[in-house]
Length: 431
Image (cartoon, rainbow, N blue to C red; front, side, top):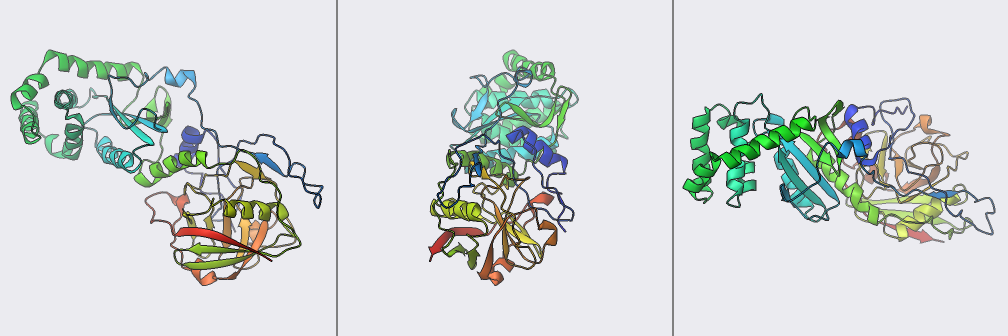
């Protein structure tokens, strides 16, 4: 039986609140569930065909919009300016503002992840670092001053990374011992040692560190780290609102890819072009072999029409099977690999007498009635709990051994996942 568990965890609820401002769920009743992000349904022109006069309302445009921060949130955090330390282009799709403290151990774990994220997506990610030297940390202010002093010689990010990487070591030092440590580190970076030492202890730099501390306190930031993603809190605390969202590289990368597919989404529903009287076969070319699916065009014409359209448009090319639950199902069809992507439209269910009564049955993932998009699944065993709730639109006729050897990765359980197996392309044959 299938149970909705993927979005019960707090971090997934937060992820959806902060990133796409929607809730995601599939009602079900066992340890595993299929899931995807819900579309924002907007009425569109219905599909029309002389052979299918009942297609009115079969499809709706469901472009995935991203939220605009509401005024009460953005008023707490000033916009990015020349005062900030920034890495990445101003026109990046995603801007992460991080409030951090160099003595904060969790900040030390986040820093290299954000650096790698920006390196992996240089055109799409901008990292903005803001100091919040916590009053409770004895060297929070002086370490902030060290980073600022290095920044005055063009080495902010180098000192920033070093302070986090070695925080456990210098955290045990006295303040005077820390200053000696920082001056030595600056020398090794090739900085002017005397200038760095003077700047580190200067009144101007000390005022700047204290100003950053007061600014964060006045913004009602409850602690570090706090990430602001495109103007909205992603995790941490701000005012009386607490957030707890995943900040590992895989989850943050999935968010970036989710934003990236906005360019790939379609603005209209696909025209109805298939002939239900013909036979359609889909060949899923994966990195581990081919999975051949007989499509049931007569039983699920709208679904098959969409699947054929997407395959011919290259929507599935170089995607991954983002969820593989052993002995249950494999799930794919989302270019973002996040499990939240959609093609920009949603279409109705086509429930028939076909059942998920054996392995190899192919169905559409949805998040409720009539919200099908591009994500599909293939059963690895009978799944009777899905009958009547998900559209069956095909059956594997060859290649189940390939499906069974795909790498298990259950995104509903969080944590670090292995890379998903690649779906290279989908070939449609028509007879």
